[in-house]
Amino acid sequence: MSAPRNPATNSGSAPGAATAPAQLFERPEGGERALLVQPEDGRTDPAEALSEFEALAASAGAEVVGRLYGRRRAPDPRTFVGPGKVAEIRAALADAGGDLVLVNHALSPAQERNLERELECRVLDRTGLILDIFAQRARSHEGKLQVELAQLRHIASRLVRGWSHLERQKGGIGLRGPGETQLEMDRRLLGGRIKQLEKRLGRVRRQREQGRQARRRRELPAISLVGYTNAGKSTLFNRVAEAGVYVADQLFATLDTTLRRLDLPGGEAAVLADTVGFIRDLPPQLVAAFRSTLEEVVEAELLLHVIDASDPGRDDNAAEVDAVLAELGADEVPQLRVYNKVDLTGGDPHVERDDSGRPVAVWLSAASGAGIEALITAISERLSAAQARGVVELGPGEGRLRARFYQLGEVLEETITDTGGVRLAVVLPRRELERLYRHEGLSAQLEPMAEPALPEAVNAH
Ligand SMILES: Nc1nc2c(ncn2[C@@H]2O[C@H](COP(=O)(O)OP(=O)(O)OP(=O)(O)O)[C@@H](O)[C@H]2O)c(=O)[nH]1
Ligand SMILES: [Mg+2]
Image (cartoon, rainbow, N blue to C red; front, side):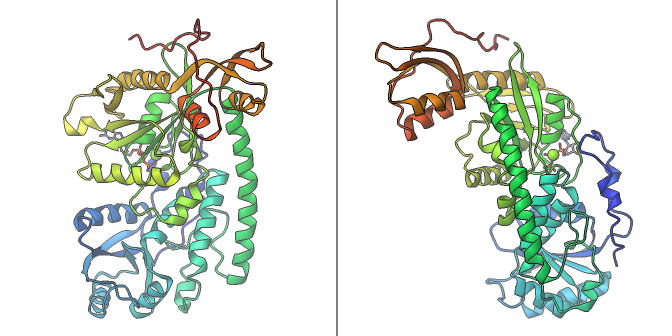
C-alpha cells in the first residue's frame, strides 16, 4: 500500500527556486505497485506506447511491477478488456503483489468501476494518470486551479465506487489534488467546489489577460516554446533566456507558462514563453483546462517547436503536437522547428532553410549549448520577417480600424489627411495585418515607409 504522500514533499519549491534538485519531486520509497495494461489496437506501436506509459507511471511515482498486453477486436463495454484478460490481470496482480492497475487507454466510468470490482484493486485510465501527474506538478495559482477543476470534472462521473477499502487509500495516484486538500469525494460538495473554482479561475484569467494586453502595448513580440513532453523545452528556455527554470527527466516537469524577456542581437527584445508539454491523447478536459494558459501560444508571433531528435517516435510526436496546436487554433502561427539533443544522435548543429532562404529548422543541443547562437540568429530573422511595417491611409469613417492599429501594433506617426482621414505609420505582426484584411474590412494597402522609423532588425551576422 502506498504511504499517503506528504504534501510538503512537493510544495516546497517556489516557482523561482530555479534549479530545484530532482529528488524534491521523487516519490518517497514504496510507491504504489502498479501493473500496466497496454491495449494493442494496431494503430500505434504497442511497445513504444508501453514504454511511454511506463515513463508516465514512473512520473506519477508508481513502481511498475508488471506489464500486460491486451489484444481485442472491440473493447468489452463492461470491463474494456475481455473476461479472460481480467483473470490474467488478477493472476498477475497476485503474483507481483500489485495494488494499482493502470490502463493505457480511456475507460468509461462504468468500465473503471467494473474492473475495480472484479480485480478488487484500484484501476486508473490514462486520463486519470495524466491528471495525477499534473496535480503533482502544478505550481502557479492558476495552474493549480485548472488542474483541480479538470480533476473534479473527471471524477465527478466516477464517484460511485462502492469499495470501502478505496476510501482508505486517499492520497494514492489519481486521488491527489494540487490544492491544500485531498480531492473531495462527496458528490454534494463537488458541484459547489467546481463552481467556486470556475469563479476563481475567471478572476485569475482576467488578470492575466490584462498582463498580456500590457505586454502587447509594449510591443514585445511573443515567442512560445511548444513540443512533446520531455523534448527539452525548459532546458532550451534556460539556455536561451538563462532563466533557471526547473528541468527534469520527468514527463510534464513544466506545467505553468513561464515568461522571460529575451534580448536578441541588435537590441531587439522579445518575450519567450516556456509551456506545458504535449502528449498523445492528451485528455480533452486538460486541453480545455489549459486553453487559457496556452493562449500565449495562440497569440505568439513565432512558435519554437522543440523536437527530441534522438527519439525514434519523434515524427509521430511532432505530428501529435501539430494536431493539438490545430485544436488550439494555433496552426497558423509561424513555426521554427528545433531538433534538440543532437549530442545524442551524433549529428552536427546546423540550420535548415527553405527555398527563399528562410530558416525553418535548427538542429542543436540545448544541454551542451551547441547551435544556440544559430538559433538566436534564426529567431531574429524569422521575427523581423513576421513584422509588417508601412504607411496606411484610412478614411474618415474608419475610426474603428484606426483604433485596431493602436491595439495590435505600434503607431509610429499619425497625420490628418486632406479628406479628413488619417495616415498612420505602423508596425504590427503580419498575422494581425492579414486578419484585418480578411476579417475586419481593411482595404487600404500598406505602403512602404519612406524611411524606416525603427532601426532595422539586425541579422547581419
Ligand atoms: N542529451 C541531452 N539531453 C537533453 C537535452 N536537452 C534536454 N535534455 C534532457 O531532457 C530531459 C527533459 O528536459 P526538459 O527541458 O525538462 O524537457 P521539457 O520539454 O521542458 O519537458 P516537460 O516540461 O516535461 O514537457 C532532461 O533530462 C534534460 O536534461 C540535450 O540537448 N541533450
Ligand atoms: Mg519543461
